[in-house]
Figure 1 (spheres, one colour):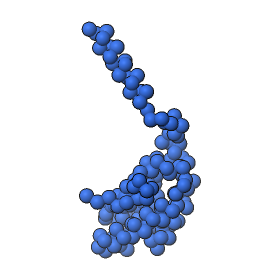
Figure 2: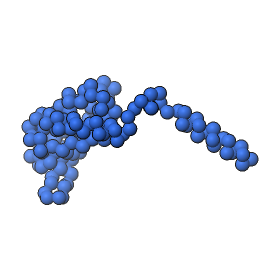
Figure 3: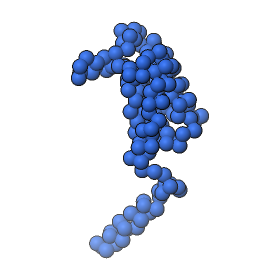
Figure 4: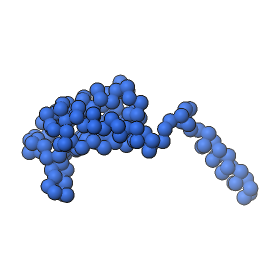
Length: 145
């Protein structure tokens, strides 16, 4: 009985390993993906900042293989209505899309998060955050619940 369980477990493991998507071996690791994205971050930062009327130093851009986070530091809109921040975030997303379209290092990015923060010294307080999910068309769409 123990041998049958062992054989069934081994067969299940082999089936699971063999179920990797086709081409998975050709895909770079997440760390390699992030490393190649790094060279494009300053241009993205400039484009996003310009689209919303900020200096590049007012926007922080961080990426992982599957998500980009834009942080807007001490925006004048921190005191405005949520709709104003939402509208501005959409402008930044549109600029981001133009910056990364066709770049293979960003092909796996499925989400962009935009944070508005109030920062004083080392202390940051999140004012509001927005999530944009990648649509089948390739554009990023505001997630609403």
